Length: 356
Image (cartoon, rainbow, N blue to C red; front, side, top):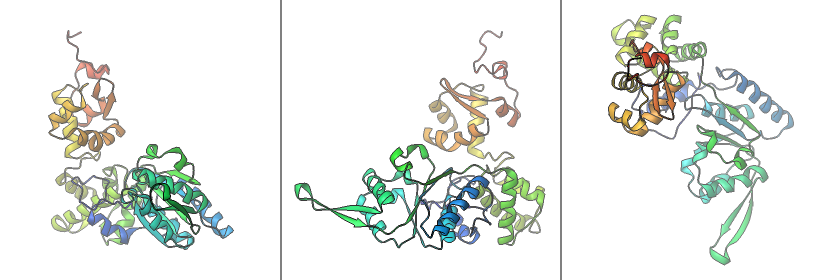
């Protein structure tokens, strides 16, 4: 079971939101794996990272700077903590949005201990002046502190102890190449397979003292959108249902009934996801339809549809983004149990105006 912290402490509006709320953060502290052996999934990343850390320990040196990219909830923060634990070093946690000035970063860097791990979440959201200061800190373990203003300003070099920067980002493409190039090891976190999520759920259930059988874990895993954080949030909600409506033991039927109450269907779609699909299919015949029009039909903001609902629908193959607008796929019609018109069935994305 793997977790990923976030700087957003507000509760998500959706049960299948991959951003952590306060309850998630409280539970995650007790459930995090402590070493790479306990970390489930991400096999290639674990193998590669294990080699990097073992080699650094053998040399008696600090580990290379590490960049972790991927969607929220896949384990980036957990891996940063594991890196610190494997290296026997303390860890400092901050985030890109919290560093708005170069002085903010200088204050953090100057207080680091030798070998300390600095975890910088959402590193792509750091201010440009701080970003440019980080280049020198990562490469030369030195920063220049500017004293004064104008022609009389003086740059005072400040030596830093060797440290390991672990950067995490959900949008690696926004990182400038000079920053990406300074990381010695980069890894992309993939979404989890259902079998891996079942292992996550069984481990969490044991730690939370929840009784669950194999079929119950499989039912939750199949609705977890490939994300451990969502799997564990669903597990807690199913646990609540089982305690109130049953004897506390989670089976497939109990898990299915519980998630029906919370409006999470068999593929992990919730009310918003289905609302977008139903509007696209029932009101617009499967599309193509513009994003703004679709958002009005659903009663949501354009950004909500584009950034919250669409990524998962596209990943599941239920919706396609085309130059002419959003188009439903045959899988979307099948998932909602609807019969597509001839134009949708033939895949041309247009209404047959003349019935031919």
